[in-house]
Image (cartoon, rainbow, N blue to C red; front, side, top):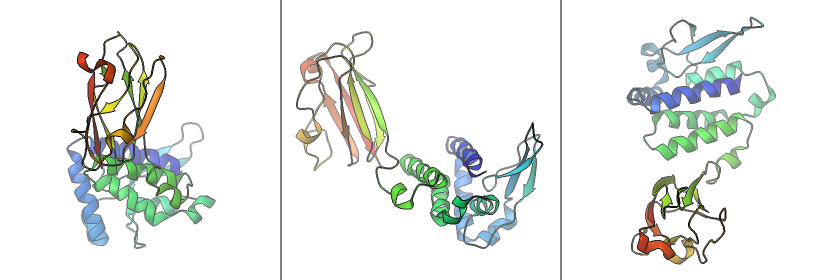
Length: 251
């Protein structure tokens, strides 16, 4: 039940965050946190009713606060709880009948889902959703709260597939704590050297640059970045050919 609900939350959150309706949804979340009882009087909290096509079993899936019932479906009004949790998470807790529910960090789970709805920061939303999904899967709170838990790795090719001497893509954005993996693709040898005049203040240029070159296709090198800012870098052997790129770290 919980995993299906998380999937619905994810889909609804992704849709909301990508459209103008996210502002309304975020405002809804803020109002809910300020005064849940007053909020409940003006905003509907609905559960989507679905029927299993083979067994005929009926299940209720909580929708995000303020979400209208999808056309062609049946929904039931959800009662706002008084346990300090949002209506969405309260409904999940009430309908979950597994041992995991007894040990679930519901308040932390609730706080992370609220951040997914409210935050304007892409990295904060991503990290909050990863933590919420981890808690839903039974991962310990101490584990999901580690900075590296939600970290991702992005790939940059060194040399385009057609042999052009470029970094592909030439500009990427990552969140603080994420990593970049550079793969020697075509036209090597290549390396990654950061411009000491075009990196955030306080970052040691040598510590984040490659000390050697990659000669074999498929060879790779990775580095994580913890300080936000713009990082310009280049391939030393092919700098004259314009092989340079930019990394943007946010969060």
